[in-house]
Every structure is written in C-alpha cells, then in structure tokens.
Image (cartoon, rainbow, N blue to C red):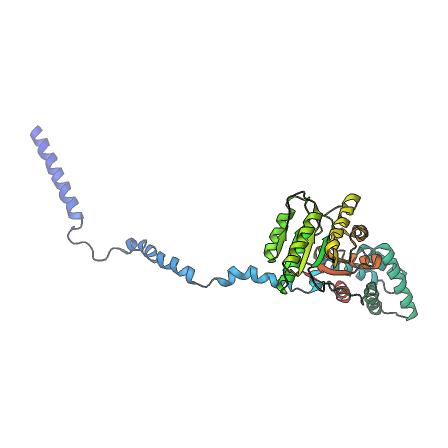
Length: 372
C-alpha cells in the first residue's frame, strides 16, 4: 500500500513537470523583437541626453535680458507719467472745482484744491485772488479759459529767467556740497550726480563727510563704484572738516573735475549740528570755493520741507534745491511753494529710483505735466 502511494505521487510530479515545460517558450529561440512595452521605457532614456544638450543651445537671450532692457524704458517715461500721483490728485480736485462752473463755489473749491496739493495756504490764496481778478477783468465765462489762465498763474510763481544749470569752477576742482536731513535721498542723489558726470567724461571724487551715521561711507562706496568715482573717507566718528579738507587736496592733486561732498543728514532743529555744517563749508573755502550747496528735500515731507530749507539756507548758503521722490507723492505742489516762499531755485528733481531719474527742473514743463 505505501508503495502504491509513492508511485502515485511520482506520477503526479512528473505530470506537473511536463505541463510546465510545455507552456514555457524554448530558451534557444527568443523573440527577435521584444514587445513594445519593454522598449518604451528605454526610448526616453536614450533621447534624454540629446534634449538636455539641445536646451542650452536654444537662444534664450530675450527672456533673460528683458528686465535689464526694461530699466531704460522706465527711465525714459515722460514727466507727465512720473508725476502720475500728483497729477491725478490735483486733477480730481480741480475737476470737482471747475465742475461748478464760474461761480463762488468754484473759487472756494479751487483754493481748497491748491492747498490740498501742498502749495501752501498763503500761495494758494494769492493764486485764487489773482486768477479771479484776471478772469473778471477779461470777462472769462468758460471753464476752459480759466483753466488755461491757472496754468499761466502757476508758472508765474517761478522765476523763469533764473539760471538753473549747475555751476562749475573755471579751474581747479568744482565743489558741490549736498545737504539735507536723513531720509531725503541725499546719498542716492550724490550717486546719480556722480554717474551722470562720469558718463559726460568728467572725473569725480566723493567726500564721505557724513561720519556719524552708521554705514554711511559704505553706502557711498557702493555709489562710487557704480559711478566710477574716487572715494575719500576717514574712520567713523572722524571730524567732517578733516575729511573734506583731505578730499579737496586729493581732488586738486589729481586734477579731478568735481568733488561731491556728502554731509551728515542732520536734523534742522539741532543748532550745533547746523553750525558744524557751516564749518565744513568754511574749511573748503579756505582752499577753494563751493560752487553749489544743494539742499535735498523729500517731496513727501510737504510743508515741513520749507522749514528745512530756511534753516539750511542760513547754515550752508544753499544755492539750489533738489526735490526728490516726486514720483511717490500726491502733493507735488510743494515745488511751487518752495520757490514762491523762499526764492531758492529748484535745480533738479528726482522722479524715480533709476540712475536716469534725476533731471533738470523746468518750471513750464513741470506745470504742464502737473496739470495735464
């Protein structure tokens, strides 16, 4: 009986082996072409090196360089576009005022609009009174005629015959002092001036006379490198007068064309610091002459800029104003108030962050852009 069971088991095993062998393909005759699903994963792998190599060869210059190409385009925007916030602010209010037609309410709203644009109460009142009188004398009844007269009235606030070009020394280094409180854009203005002078072929040195503010000389060093200018500096906390003296000697010995003096961004309420600013000027004038003392005013400061201008005019003998950040304020009317109230000419305006966004000031162009 056990022998029969063993024999039966052997029969089953042999049968199973034969069945498996019959279903299995012969090893000596593999298919000449493997199934497609075996090749499919290999084709992308084989093609991958070709794709990777080809990608760097495809010209990609336009997408990569487009941000660089945009910068000069932004810098070439019209003044009307750059004064967009002030223009829209004033236009909205003038539109409301002139919407009443030539009547008492129109004149009241016009005066309010000029005050809100930061022209100043006294100046706004005088403009409105003058405009009203001229309109009556000329018997103007159309709003468009009064608007045109307003533009002429605003331009008249400036001395259009005044020379606004920056002054250069006939010989020796030209010295321009740049003064102003912290945060007005003083260092940026110096950098833009240096870059413009270098582009025009003039050799430039920067004097880091702001020795009290941390990292002031480091910021100036960055601008000096960008503008291909020389930098003269001392240790932090050094005497600003000593820095300016050495910088002037440096510029004169090397026959440099222009020396730009960066001064501390001092508060106009601190008299000792203002006195020191006068001292810096006197140090220069023992050796040469200061051709320009440019006061940098932040347009967003509004009427407070007038207070700064009065203080600096006495301490540093300000010869001109650089009005910065006009592109970022809705109250560009401060430009009209500065000249009308103080008689100090605006020589340059800053209307952006780019190197080309510092430009000469022209009263008529400015008013046209403001009222466009």
